[in-house]
Amino acid sequence: MASGSGTKGGQTAGAVVTRFAPSPTGFLHIGGARTALFNWLYARHTGGTYLLRIEDTDRARSTDAAIEAIFDGLGWLDLMGDEPPTFQFARSDRHAEVAHRLLEAGCAYRCYLSSEELAARRERAQAERRPFRIDSEWRDADPATWPADLPHVVRIKAPREGETTIDDLVQGSITVANAELDDFILLRSDGTPTYMLAVVVDDHDMGVTHVIRGDDHINNAFRQLLIIRGMHAAEGGWPDPVYGHVPLIHGADGAKLSKRHGALGVDAYRDEMGILPEALFNYLLRLGWGHGDDEIISRQQAVEWFDIAHVGKGAARFDLAKLQSLNGHYLREADDARLAGLVAPRMAVCDDPALLTRAMPVLKVRARDLNELADGAAFLFAQRPLTIEPKADALLTDESRALLGQIATRIAVQDDWTIEGLEATLKAMAEALGLGLGKLAQPLRAALTGQTTSPGIFDVLVLLGRDESLARIAAQAVPAATQQV
Image 1 (tube, rainbow, N blue to C red):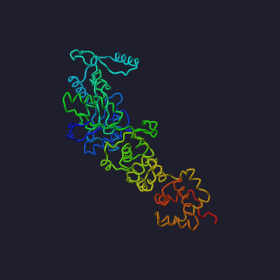
Image 2: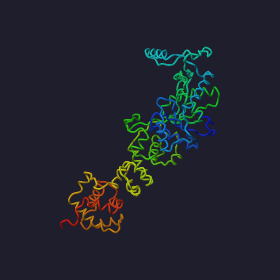
Image 3: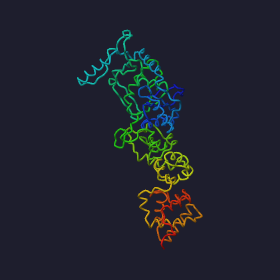
Image 4: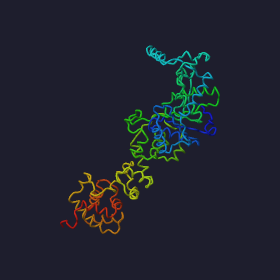
């Protein structure tokens, strides 16, 4: 299906225009974030424009809080539109205008069938075990016979013969018999437009050339084409868009992604799970699209390489472990001051941001998310007496406490309080005692951090500083002066 050249909304004729159009009924869904990403990338890759539309026609469920949540999530991923967002509800008069134009052109009709009549016909079809199709006697009635004062809806006049084909960028060629398309409603009995109508009008008026969205909208595409082609016949200048229907995201078990698979909202990945935006960007990019064996793909590379035609037809499976692994990579690449700013609010105590920043190079080596970074940094700001975890306490035997007393004596007079200087001193001590360095490091780690895992023990000593290190060791050690020779 060839695309026409949109010139609406200030766009250049022939340029690609994509859009992301969420409904503000809750958080920004992880699947919606990927759809936004694909639209943003395709626009960037082709030198086009990426737009944002809030489809807030469902007034009962649309909320300001949901709109803010969507903007917040898109802003965090740096996927806001290139122009101010369009709000669908504000354009209701324009949507109705198009419906009336379709009426004038004979592409739509007033239907006066009541809900009771439709229900009876639906029940009869079920009883006769045949599919229910709207077959309104008003479809071919002379408009001159339309009652002026009776409630009615406006329905599209769908073709009943032939077929419609969409050459989808992702799914390939898809054909549907026109007899399968129903005379769906454009305007409700109160005159308000339906979603199906509003989407088409907004896409046209915004100059959208490429509609990239979830494959649950494939059936909608055939219905929406009826409106587009009806308006093109009525007044021209309504070209078919290019469609790209992307498979939905499934859980690890192959079922459609749902709450039972874990977090669904982008905000949860950021706030609760401590994922960086660049990691989620990279992960969503690779969720159904690939570039050879490349796993780590920068934003710049993504723009250069992305093509919607290379999105797979099959549903992608969400793998939390892979996301966390990818996030670990981006943590190691991230600026230390930026990480410290993100980690500090996750900590019960952080009274020295500069210390947290200095610690980042050794803390982020093994961390997979910001929460693990916060946990790993907690020992730096712990108050004495230190809480000792059970596993760490098991290391503090009488023998190891005696060793801590000797360590304290040795390093108390240390002139060179650096990683290299402390390492040289403790290695020399271990050799003199005929012990492996680990025999000193394990109880020392327990005394300094209250844990069995931490950054390198010499990093810990330097980060805590001389006074705090000696105070923590003293709290667990048997002083060397009291030890029996």
